[in-house]
Length: 214
Image 1: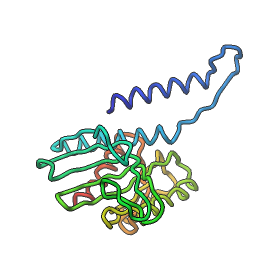
Image 2: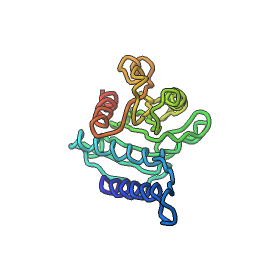
Image 3: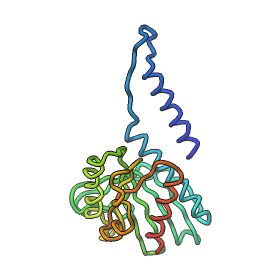
């Protein structure tokens, strides 16, 4: 998983460089601007979270599901002969008006597709969090994007149960640190955490797992 993400990222960076420098050789000042996209960041977030889950929970046996339904990717970790499971869903479709998908998720209003759902299951007990990645660091944009955290917390259900947390993931957040504070997240069940490297990916994974495994 990590190797594929590395090659994907490498190809993207070289492609970006070629476009910015110009490839026609007809002009010395040819430049094309191509900013990193939300899709690249979202893919990297999945890989970073998957790596941290594997690192922090080595007693789980991890595998990607080959043909997931209602979700683009699904990483499953199993322990105790499958009685305990942790699942990381990417772009899971939660059908509208309470119609559950094969994993038991739905939206009580319109269809929703959270970027990630991280779920812990112990026999019949299921707890989960919703995570939404946004490639932005601007104060106004972060505040605007927090709407998705509130929407997912209120609308998404698993057999009638709401997520424990609904968090926004951004590459940087220097102007709104209160959104990442434990007091804020504990009080409101929503927040905004930075995910930009392995260090804060580990912080995020530990924080979310602490809530799920409590």
